[in-house]
Amino acid sequence: MDFELSEEMKMIQQTARKFAIAEIAPLSRECDEKEKYTPEIRKKAGEVGLVGAWIPEQYGGAGVGILGHSLITEEVSKVDMGIGLNIIAASFGCEAILQFGSEEQKKTYLPLVCTGEKVFAGAFTEPDAGTDASAYKTRATKDGNDYLIQGNKMFITNGTVCDFFVTQCITNPTEKKHNSFSLIIVPAQTPGITRNKIHGKMGIRASDTAEVAFENVRVPQTNLIGKEGKGFGQLMNFFDTTRVMVSAQGLGLSEACLETSIKYAKERNVFGSPLISFQLTQKKLTEMAIMIEALRGLVYKAAWLIDAGRPDYQLAAMAKYYSGQTAVFCANAAVEIHGGYGYIEEYPVEKWYRDAKILEIYEGTKEAEILTIGKNLSK
Ligand SMILES: Cc1cc2nc3c(=O)[nH]c(=O)nc-3n(C[C@H](O)[C@H](O)[C@H](O)COP(=O)(O)OP(=O)(O)OC[C@H]3O[C@@H](n4cnc5c(N)ncnc54)[C@H](O)[C@@H]3O)c2cc1C
Image (tube, rainbow, N blue to C red; front, side, top):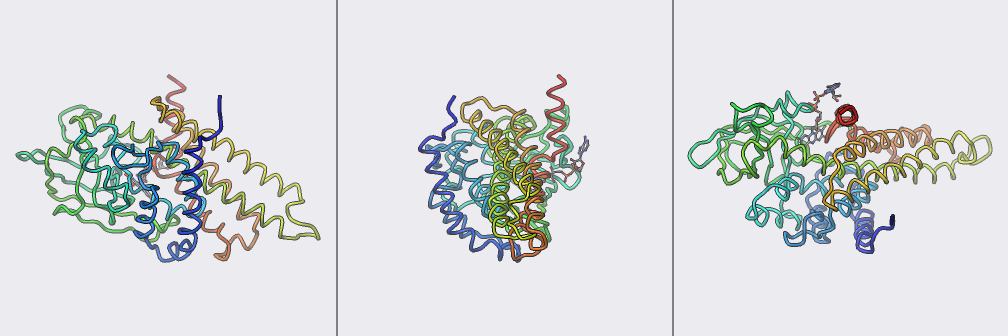
């Protein structure tokens, strides 16, 4: 058993770290305050191979797999989870194309995202259905050689800035629920699409989140990913990968909380001694450190298994669940260690506290992960 990262993985980690410190850090506070999406950062990241890096080289990516992508995610999230999301989620949806798409779809779409020029969005959640993915109502009806798509999607990352959606629609309404769905690629400029940015998010405010309405949106049937009626299963497989990627966000944010808290606790004096000399403070730091190491183990192993061709949905759900737990715990502890200064914008921990919460909500809520893990254990 070898826990050492390969030289290639260390290199991608180093590149992402340098990029995040040089390019993302200076924009962090402004983008959070102004809810500013940064296409220029995404393009710069594309130039150094950080966008869609998990995509195999033959389709334009860096070919560093899900482990490499997780390392990138960890590093950018350590600096800013919102801006980081703009980089790592530019390829969100392409996982389904790589896994289930035709060779032509792979060659057409995947190279476009890796340069940072084009952006994808995975549009699944609907206003009335999130956790229950079998309750989506968006319909794609056949019309000649096309589909006509009708429905509404909610909370879509990259919704107003993307060039393509990968979306889940009912194509076979007479089939049983789980056999009625299909994943379809929809160019975002197609007539009939309305996109409205959602303002006022608690955290990751530099990321773009939108409501998307499809009204008689016409796309060719060749935009279907894989086979009709297989969309539900495809989406579940898709989440087994993307949940691991998202878990790495929590790892990066938690590491930032720990490092910043140690530094602050060494500098801050209380009762005539540095804060870090008190055992109550050390307990908080210790718990953070233990959770981070455990989370790292879950994320790296789950990613490594995907790259080895043996994805483990149970481990992916555990990583995602524990990522939210760890990030929320670490951000809370970091605010507490900073005292009153933790509550004001002058220090980054108040932002991390706000950012962390999304990790218990998107890509499967913490409750959804518990249900998945519990169901599997009780089989
Ligand atoms: C910033 C942001 C970005 C997002 N990006 C995307 C994106 O790019 N693409 C996309 O498709 N979606 C995206 N989402 C949507 C996100 O994945 C959903 O919000 C999430 O899955 C929960 O769905 P919901 O909001 O409909 O909550 P609901 O499903 O209505 O759940 C409400 C609450 O009930 C709980 N619950 C549900 N079922 C059970 C049960 N059986 N037992 C007990 N409790 C239960 C849930 O855990 C939750 O706490 C994003 C959301 C946000 C906020």
